[in-house]
Length: 178
Image (tube, rainbow, N blue to C red):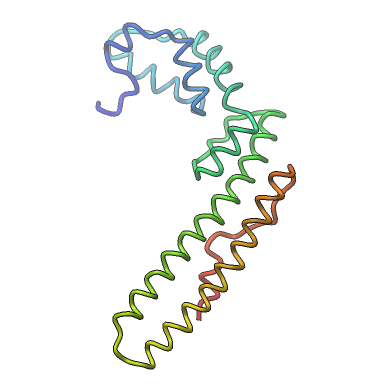
């Protein structure tokens, strides 16, 4: 039962509205209440479902903001689709913008690591032809990185101007490697 959302002390002292608010502010789905009910049932503690739902709605108002969508997207965090209506539309739009920036930055980081590994392998080789091949690979990867840096700067500028960045497919650069 180590997976229970609440322990006995928590079940006995919980403020159901505050718990709902906290869960909503963290973006938990409505099914989270069922997990709390199951956890507390073992201790004969019954949830105040109405208070929890009211609190969760308060929490969702904090969670479902464009700013939070952007933050979660740029962090690469998951989104459980809990924001409804106009707030949900705005949240999703900003989440997608942030996710695009996150994916490009992640690819830039991957490219940098790949270039570093190529340099390290190049330094260890004693074969001139292999050394030259590493040099060709490094130049190619550096060009991809430069192009991707331009895409990132353009995407960031678009987001800062409150418009949509161009669609970006993560790790697409891998398909172009020789």
